[in-house]
Image (cartoon, rainbow, N blue to C red; front, side, top):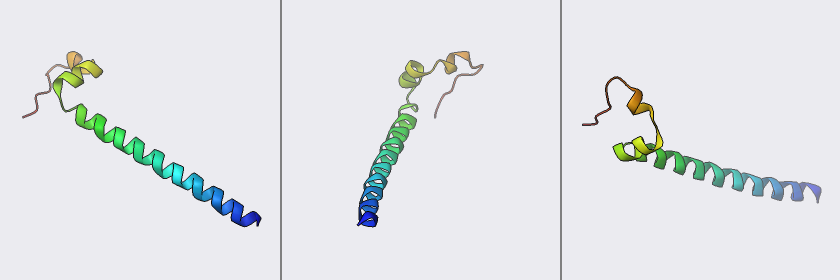
Length: 58
């Protein structure tokens, strides 16, 4: 009985961990995609202004 309860609880925790990892991965992919656009990169980071040569994707 105790083992079944433990297995249900670990299954629920595992499901939440998978969901959270998927969300984090999705946000990471969106952030990396957004940083490819100059206006987003200028809005989010101030590093391009401090560089010697600006980043110009071709």
